[in-house]
Image (cartoon, rainbow, N blue to C red):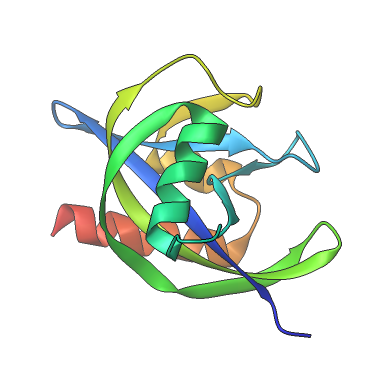
Length: 132
């Protein structure tokens, strides 16, 4: 079965020397922290879907910096998905979301909270790009 393509956002913001990334609680299991992601809608590419999902799930707007890593394939609910993640610089934030808890945390904290090794590897790659 061909995986369903999705876009995901590794959103970041700088506060002086401090760099934080955004995590949201997973819809299927609220104990799990993930990056916002979702299906690509008609007329969108993966980057546009990532920015839209970031807005819908976390109330955050931002600018795409570029893709991070190769797409990740995994089971999400009852379907296999292929998610291309993008580094997104946060530009604004509103309180309106789809009701999920969200958290801006330093990268070291995000690496502790994210339970998936492949997602942690993407975050490490994003961190290298932001430091470079």
